[in-house]
Every structure is written in structure tokens, then in C-alpha cells.
Image 1: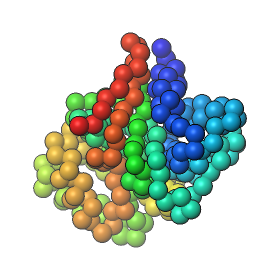
Image 2: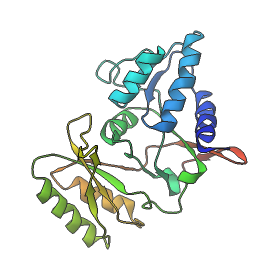
Image 3: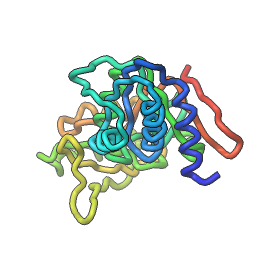
Length: 231
């Protein structure tokens, strides 16, 4: 199966966890977009859900396809969030943020009773870090924040370039008006320590390490669908 077909199959399997009347967090990215398309078919057939999107891009797709939306202010407690991931490591630790929506994705996931991750099996890794770690930062003091990240990573034995994300020749700006530094640290042995160190830096708004949030991963591969539960 080609990558898109695998994404569709994982999204289809996740849809089986959506119940009528749910308050549903809806993720961002290519796999999440396939989920939205399948969800729209169910909504058109009569399913009632309240959707809270994790990005303006997802909100626009939902509006285009007729999926009704709320905001997290209007609906601050969610039953379930379904989202993709850039990497899935041990204990369903994740790297997210390749699509630039990591802050809103984490806020929505944390507001949910349960988070399900959908992906193809290329996203499974023995340790996080092959995919560069997105770090959302404030525009003010960018260089000082970058140096602080380098120092904090170095104290944990991590090194590698930090690259300001650019789109069409201009710095990529998140929905919240921030910038993203992509950190190519390589393998991250202690994700919790890095998470804590990054959160201690004032210029860091959020980072793409999602730890202890996902409860179930639905993984599509050549041999079909398999699920991985968090302990």
C-alpha cells in the first residue's frame, strides 16, 4: 500500500472510536486530514459531534466539508482527540509539530479525556529524535532563546543544529504568531529531562515532545492495522 492509503486506513480505524454526541479534538497534518474527510462522511450521514480543531488549516477543511466546529473556550473539556504524529516512540511518547500546530495540538490533547494517535508504521521508532524536534518560540529575543536551548541541550549531552523554519523564503509563523526552531538533536535518551529543560526557558512557548498524552496508537502497515496501548 502507498503511504496515503496507509494513512486512510489508520484514520478509518480511528473513526470506529468516535461515538455520536462526542466532543472531539481534531488534529492537524496529512493523516489527520484523511480522518477529517472520513468523519465528514459520517456527519453527512447523520452523526452528531462537536469538533474542536487544532489549527486554522484543520478548521478550514472542516468548514469546507461540513463538520461542525466549536472552540476550546466554548467546549473546554473534550471526550477524545484524534491526531497524527511525526514519530511514535516507547510508551507512546511522540514528536509532533511537523505541520506547525504543536502548541494548539498539545492544548487540545491535554483538554481531552483520551488521545488516539493515527499513523503509518514508518513513524514508529525505538527512540525519539530521528525527526527534528519542533520548538515553538517567541519572536522577541529569538537569538537569546536559541542560545539557551543549545546550552540546555548540551547539559543533557545533546547537540545539533537549530534551524529557523522558513516557508517560501520567509520565517514560518504559527497560528499563535510564534516562530519554530527545528532542533536536530538526534536520539533523545531522556525525553522528560529535555521537556523540563525546554519548559524552563522563558522564550520557549512549547515544544513538540508529547509525553503521557496518547493512550492508544492505531498503526497501519503492509500487514494491516495494529494498535499499541500506553501502559
